[in-house]
Image (cartoon, rainbow, N blue to C red; front, side):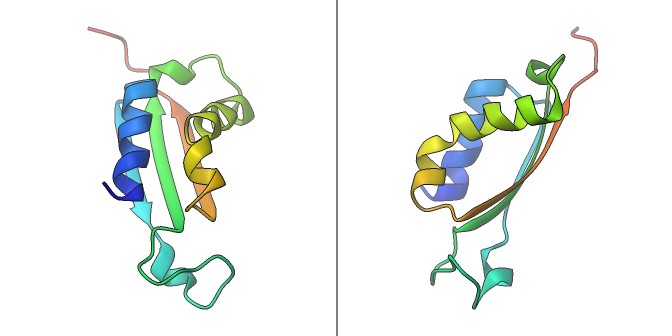
Length: 91
């Protein structure tokens, strides 16, 4: 399983998001710090989940970072986050 797939699986398990997009932006960082051949070093994540209701932006980002601590300590050099609380009422 690649890094992007691990990120997606961990976030789905932890937050059951209504929306999740994980984009590997590594190639656009070629020549910059942290870039490695093969990519999977720079990611952008957009996640919307009811689990973030009541959290500040910083608190929600900290929760995501905690779930992804292993990846952030290892292969991931940069992680751009867009974290939103899902306001859709539950069925």
